[in-house]
Image (cartoon, rainbow, N blue to C red; front, top):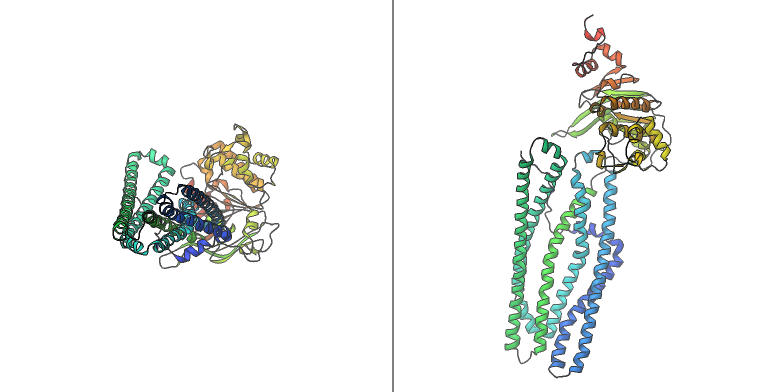
Length: 607
């Protein structure tokens, strides 16, 4: 079995000014804290630069002269500066961590809000795991850049410039000799950067492959075990895992070479200082100055190493920010009007006028129509069923009424007004949807019926459950309505979840009810009887549309519309449609061909 992965594009640039400006927009509200952090960073750098200079003074002025009393005072000043530097660095780190967390909090909210506005169509073509990665891993990468990268890079550059200036002031000849190793360190850094970039891309790609493979296998574990694929899947995972390990090791090898190379270059610079400072310039260079220069030289290479580390942070952040902003820029295909029509009460009239609708487009750009010039009207309180072969366009009817999608042509009207003129929130408040795959959230059965609507009292929840016969199994549970529901209702049967969905619809009391009945095909006879009874009750006195797969569930609806290749081809009641001998009759015969069902004589064609 070939393994196919849907991977993200790798960012081409290690730094993108456009992305950086946009990212810093989330930091802008906290610019006061950032400014204070920069000030603390400058003070911390100054404290770090003062150390070697005080060492020089201590050696040349006090130790060489034997003035131990003055050395004590200098030592106290040195310790005070160290303590101050520690305090400055602590406060600076705390402030930037705070800024990072607040900025990422705002970005998470913006991302989650945008995800809630995107249409259902977006989620049918986007893997859920990828979206979760955006809100978790990618946000963390940006947080690391804000807390360590942005101000950290500035601090490293300030420290580097400060060391250079101090060295030039103390002894410019020794400073120039020290700087002769800079081309070598630049060469080492460039080589490391190229290698680090290669390994970063490879590790990220292989990690994405492992995540995708794990998600697929854990989700389909029942099939894996049923078809004895454990060993085969283990071998495939082992191959993916081995690739990830090898690229990680390559990256570690690059780091392992880089740091010793920087250390060796630093040692070379110290050696040059000893040779020239202790030999060539010994008449003008004191011991204290020589020691101070050695310390400054060692510190000179520390920010260079830090900048190389922060390059990786910056690269990860740029890739993450590109993916996050690409998601934030995802167009909202179904949006509310600027001035929505108020919708306080709904009579329940539904009308389709010359509706054409397509989910996808063919290679030449033309729409692949799912609905073609569909027109019908459903009166308030009328119950209507849609039937047809798979792909005929039945579920698309519901998707358009709820505005999960909008038609490319024509109009969908509720109470005589195009649904695109209503606010989605107002429209959906009056529409109940009972899906064939009932989704239950983590929480209690009671909370899954109420769905966060605090206006629905406990008594109303129980009455709704009793109305649709759901109380029969709920009362047998350990904690009744307070029983915790596992992820996606894993501990409940299909029929039990279906009854909870009906109770949910009754509790919210919508004027329009949309039902997909396919779930009743996989339940036992007793539960199916309960569900059919619940269905008859919930359809009463409200506009109802049933997307029918089992024709036995719709024999008593007011009207049946037959869809074929996106068009309405037949319309009528159950017995009338059977008598016509058309597509509905063929569907009925196909569904019950293995059962002894006596069809009307006109349908059988024997009279």
